[in-house]
Amino acid sequence: MSKRNNILANILIALVIASRFIPEVGQYTPVFAVLILTAMTFDKKYMYIPLIGIFASDLLLEYFNYYQFNYLFSSLFFLNYGTFFIIYLLMKVFSKKDNLSSIGINILFAPTLFFIISNFIVWLTAGGAYPYTFAGLLYCYEMGIPFYKHHLISTMIFTPVLFAPSLLFKLKQARYLLTK
Image 1 (cartoon, rainbow, N blue to C red):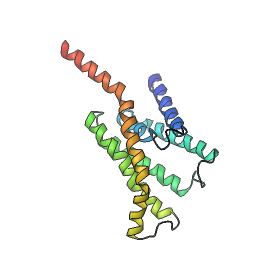
Image 2: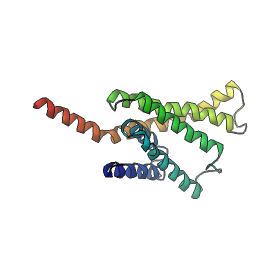
Image 3: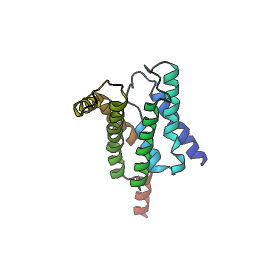
Image 4: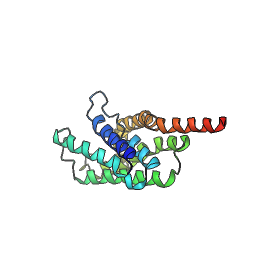
């Protein structure tokens, strides 16, 4: 990893960790934005960047008792991380370029797929909190809508912020080439 990429990776990891502890931010975190940026701009060997940030913040959240149950290394923990991994891989495979249309699609894709998979997992693993019926599944999805809204809004805010420097550089470079 080049020195520049190493610095960027550390900044992104710190951003994910810090954002989950800012009370005013709440559920509005750059987790999916960092996942999108990493999948679309970094080599696949750097997929650990968002996962380290999420894991480090999960460790700290568990240590400071923010979780109401033992989340770390539970079945829900592994299933959530598996979902992040699946989302990363799908974006890596289907997003060949970091252009505006691919970024826009991924802004909608990442939190939506996470919502669909994670709420299904919650329905299966919630210990009967939701009836194991179709109506129970729909109720679980209904209860997840506020979380989905937070994830979608934060992804819509943070993704353009993270992509802005590279897109502005490309725009400036294109204008320079046009004027030559």
